[in-house]
Image (cartoon, rainbow, N blue to C red; front, side, top):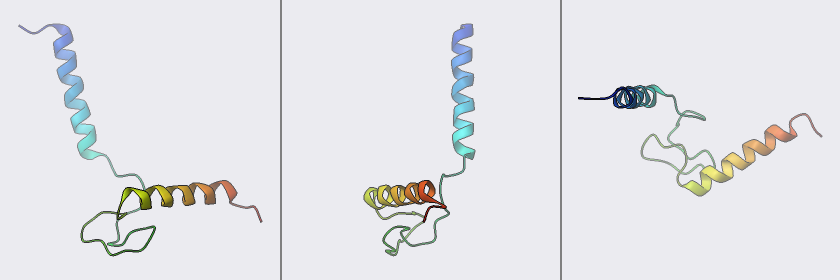
Length: 70
């Protein structure tokens, strides 16, 4: 027999799985090329490695911080 806590945990897990299955990825849509170094990518990835992703993110954040400044 399950307890009220067990039932709540199972429902929480089900809600989390449903949310993860329908969430949209953060950032731009994949184009077949790395957004940082422009290398061709064979699948739906957006960056060729974690370093390109980190560098791209740093540049975008810097652009946002400095928008409007000359």
